[in-house]
Image (cartoon, helix red, strand yellow):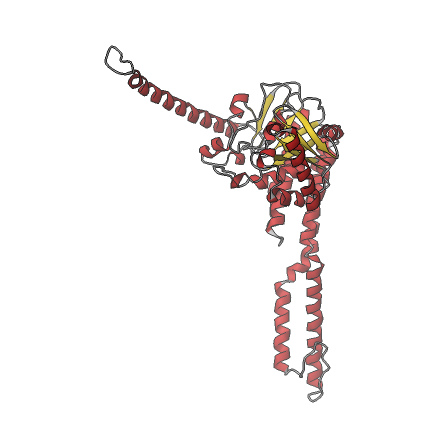
Length: 447
């Protein structure tokens, strides 16, 4: 290594400078993060009175309702998340006119299936792209919609809206979020990008976090599956990606996840992504294998194709082409009707849970009948000490008065404990009142 005039090697001279540059970069990174958080927290809520009214009902009336009834915790969580999704959609509609009359298509899949690259392949401007990488990078759910300009906006937890520079948005990876020390999604629930899309005018993609990313090494995404389900519930269709670099096998968690969606009236299209990584004959083989797996597992799907996000083109398909699927969806829709449908479906699930099921009602009715027999038995025993009372429940001997009294008291205690089960109708009436007020808020927005 060459020496300089002061006798130091070139490496010795540049090492301290490199350390200083590294420290400066780290300091700048920390400053950028702090400024970003301050920007989110200080964003003033948008003045959308209908959306605000809906959120007030959600934050107060719905929470009060759910805290006063006994329904499974899973139902409570689903109701809150789905209604939160409707509120977010109202907020997004108020701030992004480009979303008006758009069909929403959720793009889901496992870790490293290439969701962000898939959506980016439809963006006309090469300067605009979703963050991609070898780690799980989609940290915040992102709407990508057709628009005249290239804008990226973040939507805050208080209903505010902030502008995000494209280069900064690309840094919003899981690692970036993790290094903040808290979950950024708690204060920035979603992002929206408006940019021209190739051949699409009325369709909006939602780029979702990988639902299984928390299982991958280095991920910090315990809530990703929950987030994915919430945003899928808002969509009118679902595109599910499987990376061909994973041997084209449909992972069992993917199948389980898709089977749970079968009860929803939401068309599904499956994409075997990264088709450029294999020769065509191998792609065809894997595509056929995936088709058989889906059909044998009972997953209903509109079509299946092998796709190269890098080339932006379909290689092979089964049943229906991806282009045909998207063209059918690329139609203007009544967003208000879509939100009302989601609201009705959510409350219908809550009503069913609050009704306690016919099984529970039957059990209580049986206890009431049994208690009535015991009371009759007690009365007859006092009148006729020596006459056995026919007993229809299969007992082999006549019970003593003390035994009958104990049995009756036990049944009375059971009835008192479960008396609130008989009040489910009142709770349902309260829920219907809240649902009606939420419908009015949505209809007022459309009007």
